[in-house]
Image (cartoon, rainbow, N blue to C red; front, side):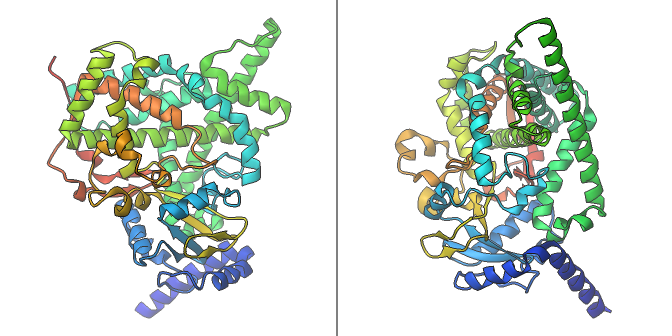
Length: 502
């Protein structure tokens, strides 16, 4: 009975693998022949190491992946997840080669689960260069600073919501932080206020949250990567419903924006330049010029929302937990905030620029819990690394989590929270590509300045009003990371907040 059961599982999984990769069947053997000299993790033919993820909980996925990567003590090693060969890289010298190579701009197949192949994250390198040049001017510091009044207003709502959570004894503040960041990113991307913190468009909020979880799950379960199988699973149906909600909201807002533009044109010769509508105006201009298709426009808007809010919201929760676990750092941050920004009022760009210790805290949290724990690239030509040559077409996974915790670079205390690492005199000795929380090279994160600005303003307004602590004593060794599109600390539910005595 057991043997029949095992045979059924193996046959089903093998069928999934052949279905998914039949177009690349010959390429599979070409890759195998070229990576034979790269140290590899022991695995089953065609199934690879993927079976090790089938029954893992979300909070165990990353640790299981790290076990696979670290089971071979070399700068780079190979492991098969299903029939596809992945080369895992965690050495900063090799990372520099990969992220600066013009032959390594293409993303791996995993990114295709983020909508489709017309969004900025997934576009092939030669197309991405063109789109990135078109979008770069709208993510410079002067443009991002025009959002500061909106950030201040939205974060004031968050402060009010957090006061209410304390009054009602609601210990889980994750949802209010989550909704605030989503509200801000939608307002600055769409150019319209959806008032998500006020409980409007709840279905939209839930759809984005479900979508982010499902995308990450597909990376580890390769049978879910087979579209015709995925569509019939419960998680596949939830994915489809979530995607329809997201597409529907995007189309509604974009169509309304176009109607408003046309109406303004009829009544005046010029379209007013509203700072929160600049980005949408630019995208619609690209559509009217024929530079962007409708799919390009919708996908660009949606990926900005999903990537922008998810990364910043999760990082903010991680920062608050680090401050709760390290009260001396929290007190240092608050002293700096009160000295520079005062006890109340809105925050200006000039004040933000002076918050040096707060920036150290953000950077150290991003080192320990990077926005992108894994970065996938697929070279279009063979790439020579320090100890081996990676063949064209192989799937390269840069393990940012391990790059950031390399004891040879960061010291024996690399797993501890120590913001002082980023003081200029200390950080000057750290190789540049040893710290890549927003990736690096030409294909780095376009929203870096936006994310850093908004996180600083949130921290200023929260730390002036509240004190963060944990429900029980926690050590860094206890923390486990759940793997979604970003790293989420599993013990984040231990985070608590109380009003400061004034």
